[in-house]
Amino acid sequence: MCIFGLSVAVLLLLVFALDLAIKIPFSRASMLMDIGGVVGALGLGVISFTTLREQA
Image (tube, rainbow, N blue to C red; front, side, top):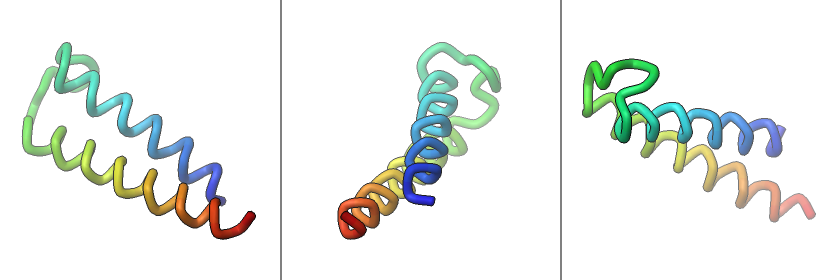
């Protein structure tokens, strides 16, 4: 589950960062949504990474 969370976080970060940078795939419909998506993806990544480290 931790690795799945990390992979989802990377995928979401990629999608929202690309939308902020080059307007693909959402044509930058809302910059606030993109920033919130990046922050949420980073949060998920941090939580998943720390939980994965605690498991080992």
